[in-house]
Image 1 (cartoon, helix red, strand yellow):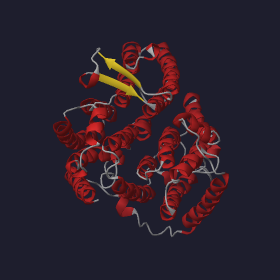
Image 2 (cartoon, rainbow, N blue to C red):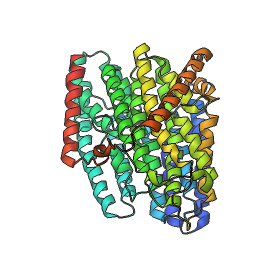
Image 3 (cartoon, rainbow, N blue to C red):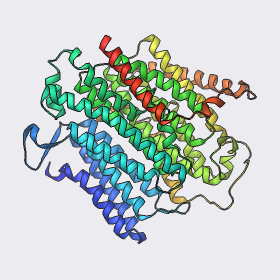
Image 4 (spheres, helix red, strand yellow):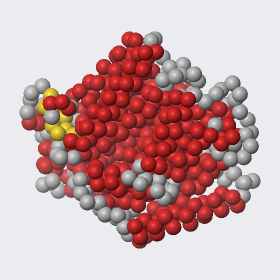
Length: 533
């Protein structure tokens, strides 16, 4: 395992960041960065392949035991690392030819620094290192959000960091409480110590830590501010793709890790919260006219579905939720990057003013259509496989709840799909699609199709056991999907257009005070409900 020394997975992106910052004025430097990132993808896949045989551990500085800095990789961490380097490769290639927006050396430096920070977060199993890396990633994200120095971006970036300062205090207090009762900062040692403790003594630290993680996942009632920040008018679509495709997934990763630390405590609570978040995300997505806000709130809905799947307590549901994390990162990256190109083509972000994309740019339209079919769970696409397993552990009632959630997703993207057909309303004649960007979006869209037929094989490869697949059950779910698709089209087609019932939601603005109150309310809910359960 010397060839895959774990600290190098954090160091390599940082070295690329420094290299690109120094030599970014040379086009060849960017090409070298793309080649290096491609090699990094191969290295991350080899780590994923080896991690299936057992956990990989590296002690930094030669200190053994819980006193040293220990980096660990199991299959879950390796999946998130591989996903990170693949999405960053797509974003880097997407920015290789910057015709639509100026991309300076600092921007490239921040991209690779964020990649290294996220990989470090997936490698560490130390409570305090998690705090440090979350804070560093937050600072980098804020700088990226405010990169173009527009007034609204500066204001929202400051709001973002202020909310995160409040949220991280909950984590620090929970961390201090865990250290007080266990005497360790290592997750593995803390898990062993907590396993013999009574749940009553763990309710307070659990509520403190999970409040901060829920905010990072943008769960209800904390979901109202994160999509707004992720979808700022002046920020870049590449940042929105990273925020939606990866950054929010780091919260899901921490959710899985801390649920393991606390022995699955509060699963029933988060099952309910996940379902409510999914429904709220769907309603808020349907209310939007801004294409980025629609995609951002649909991300919230999918995260709620993932959290619900992780909380079902079934091996297949857990596996399906992790697969859906992978699939969602792929099709949401395709949708956000594609939305960026579409917005430049039409010179607007208002989805009601976008029509006839197939006649303007067929490659972009095909890529977006494939991504849409993936996210709604169309048969043979990647989303159908992950949603099939995700709902596996649900009872009859919960299974129909998941069907209703998927119907909401279908409604969102039936509305979104109106941009593909008809006659173009308006078009920016001065902007021509860039072949480099088109190829990235099209490749991500094709992945949504290819990952469907190989989804079961991928599950067996990743999770290391014989994963069952009932063709009859899958065909039944495909039939239900077709009915849901028809119902979604009919609802959209015959819903009264003259009554804009969602207008109040579209005008919803949440102040910093209300954000802080929602954090407090969520903490109280976890404390009371989990304490009672």
